[in-house]
Length: 176
Image (tube, rainbow, N blue to C red; front, side, top):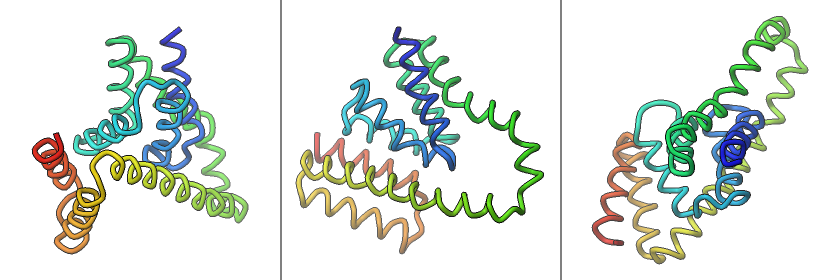
């Protein structure tokens, strides 16, 4: 049963997460945290941070980790396959159709309708992470990490992976 649950938990976000890994992360969070309760919001944010620090697609790394945590090596294989299966199926089935109508105004309009939805989902996820951080670490720690991360990435152009690793080290040293 766990293999079927893992498959559904990563297959459905793969189908509905139009826009790739970052667009499907809130959907994966809903399944993993909300539906099945395999992780808390805090644990999910840690898995997301570690996954962002590693090279490659974020969704497959998260699926592999969570699948392994819940059901071992076979669970990791099932969850990773479930993550890539929707894209594989759709690419094989719809590539010719999309190529044929790529300049269609209807296709362009559909894409414009989907983008705000993805933005709202990412905003809700960011708010949930912020609220969890505020509750767990306190207001001063949270504000410090937000301001430091913003300055490092926006003003000094530090790669986000280094900022994530720095935040993990900061949390391990000062918040443990």
